[in-house]
Length: 171
Image 1 (cartoon, helix red, strand yellow):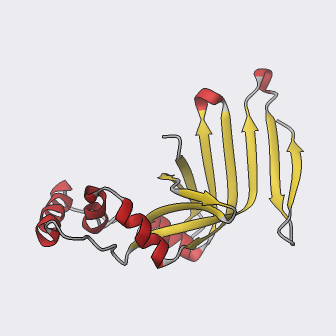
Image 2 (cartoon, rainbow, N blue to C red):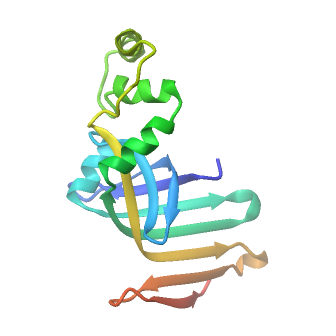
């Protein structure tokens, strides 16, 4: 998955926590992904909005590392993306109490069956507990693997005025 990225957060007591999420959009303002607003990662980001993203493509020996602040995107933007998702993924957003302990997989399967019956062939609205976030970067580092571990590392850092400063880092 070329758009798979590691999202690193910190728990309320400061412990690091990381997981893979999918990049669903980017522009001059930042990098967008979607999730359950009641998940562990969402709880972490509510307490500490400083996060890191890492993309790694082993076959290319390339990595991009991003540090910045995360915030929710608009409900309208979350709605627009939600309706573009496959029907099963929309049902899944309703069916899964993400990050919560459940008795068995049957809990989610029963939820899916009940929701499929409830929604039938009709529209599936976006649940209020699901939506998007944007990571607004303060630092972006590009890493290119090279022989003898003499890698290239180029770091862009936003200054106080929002202008990007560029530095080369030692491998």
